[in-house]
Length: 341
Image (cartoon, rainbow, N blue to C red):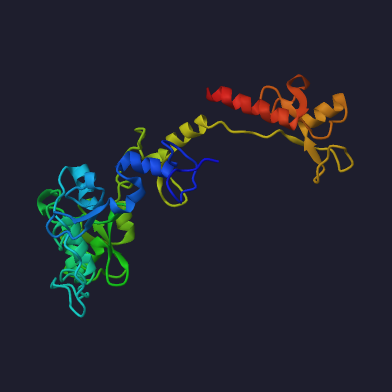
């Protein structure tokens, strides 16, 4: 069996008498493949501040390391070297309001990565170590939409839940308008809630808030102020009703909704006695099954009686058909698809 012509190589030949490994080495690098270990040279990256070593073949030696070569390929510019992280043991972060240990360039990990990604160690959200009031007012825009003569809304720019702002205080998440009112005015009287007079749920300006009872707040809501429903029916007199939760509903819309949703009625049942073949546990049976039984005799086990016109109230013999349960399901499935089309 022939092997590679290189000494101490037992691989099968691939090309020019060499195995595939030595052939690819010769094709990509050239030179004497027997002394492959002496064909590499080392140099240092030419970017100032970069201490990476370059290990390449003589005819492929470049001026950049692999890291900066990738930058040239992607951006066309090798850029500058990233300063190495200098560990500082026992030091505090240079940022005044930060009390974390310094790990790199005199900053903690949070400020170091903010500087690395944004170019400024103070970019991003305020630290959780900052005062609660400072974190709160940093997310309030005091130049929101203007509400009449009462000035501009103070809009919460943070997280919103159902239109209301949410804020993480000392130990729990609170509503932003409630937090702002308690900070600038005082606690809300017991039994009262805050109503947004400007109808802007994200507003936290105390002059736009009024403590009222829950009933008053509901009456001032959007549904309580409506005079007509979405179809234009007046919400007054006999056309107005209230549901189980006290909400106003339109009777005319209820009638339209009932007509658009046809009611499904089941076939009537009759009393036949417990000794009858078709009797259930209550001694009853469906009328269409009894009509078929009185004419054709026993119904085969597993079969059902089908109404051809789909009306369970029409129990004439000409409207009934005996079929298996699977046939009945396929028939109804086909009928639903035809109605949908």
